[in-house]
Image 1: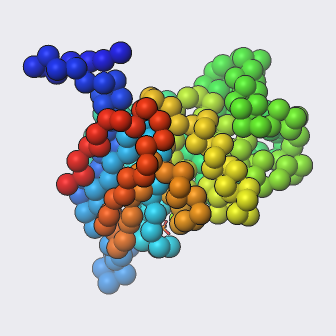
Image 2: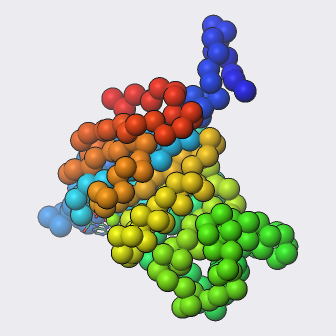
Length: 259
Ligand SMILES: Nc1ncnc2c1ncn2[C@@H]1O[C@H](COP(=O)(O)OP(=O)(O)O)[C@@H](O)[C@H]1O
Ligand SMILES: [Mg+2]
């Protein structure tokens, strides 16, 4: 499938979605007066559908702040925050909440699973919350858990699962409503190196899709090889970008300019 420009030139479908996230000149400070801390200092950042973009940089450089702005969790003071073609800063709080619910998925360092629910029930929560019947919700959650290698753990409760298994349940929960943007903040930080790598490989396999952009914040250089693109952050801006070897046909379109 392709679309055409006004001059009739064909644009591959991936390119039409290329700029799933486009941030320009993001400014964000915390505190007032002499305690004011300028965290984002005119940050530009892009993430494309069909790709896994890593956001890396030293602790405290503003990674979580930036993805919180992109995820509509934090507001910023200046700049453009365009997500899936929508300028988030133009939305009311209500519209922003609806936008997040419909289009975004989140995975955090701490898995935040509900302890009284099984793995299957945890993964189905977002669909049930959106009004789908329990049975259909659990069917869809089960299919995803199977792809994440948890076919035998679905009836277990979080305390009966390893850290890596719990994070895989959290990934299933973040993807079960098929978000167009998945944001993961240090998803391997609570895991040992080996299960961290396994979780990231599975995340890549299950989450990366032509119509979905995936952003992963990490400072774990052992998993950099799994990125399509790496944005290096320092002192509140993206200082450098790096493209990794293409991993699939969806990566053949050109990158949006970040200047
Ligand atoms: N809610 C907040 N109030 C005050 N300062 C904050 C808040 N959130 C983050 N900061 C500060 O902003 C800086 C960047 O934080 P953060 O975005 O969490 O960095 P990173 O995720 O790269 O480690 C840090 O100095 C942090 O202490
Ligand atoms: Mg952080």
